Amino acid sequence: MTYSVKEIYYTLQGEGAHAGRPAVFLRFAGCNLWSGREEHREQAVCRFCDTEFVGVDGPGGGKFATANDLAAAVAGHWPKTKSGIRPYVVCTGGEPLLQLDEAAIEALHTAGFEIGVESNGTIKAPDGIDWLCVSPKGSAKLAQRSGDELKLIYPQVESQVQPIEFESLAFKHFYLQPMDNPEVDENTKRAVDFCLQNPRWKLSLQTHKILGID
Image (cartoon, rainbow, N blue to C red; front, top):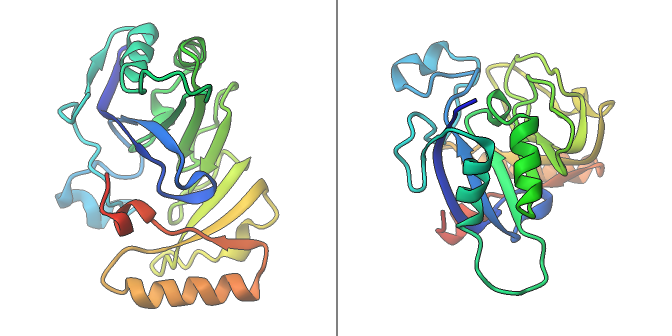
């Protein structure tokens, strides 16, 4: 399989349970809920994506002919220091599970990486992922109903998705993340109020945007 990658870069995880953790971000090209093109946004299942995932022209991006080639590219972005810390890679997109397969997981593990995945949950995850974050989008049906972290963008007004709908799913952590749009201040207030009233939920902020880092 040839892997199409928008970008690979080293930064801090900005969201959820691993916020603040150094990681290599492996952003796969493509998504099954939106083409990534503005002219298609209004007809898309997910209309609020703020990520560029079209093409393979980002920093570190390209097409990788083998899983080992992909893993080597990821490893090249981890600092060459002997910290004793296991390297961490976040596989994201778009939708990473369109491409992340058992061969890539094995190659990344062989390269020493702990593997995190950020998925919209519409594709069943393969075995071997170390940390799975599912972020439900609109009316899209969930195929992956268990994992480590469920992170819901809130509020999703058009689809009327409610956090309470997900509490029966088998996740260890439940996060509410304010929708980043012109009403972000009001969205944040609503998310805070919901978490205070429903203590199973924790607030996730996009700290990379707050800090002004990629």
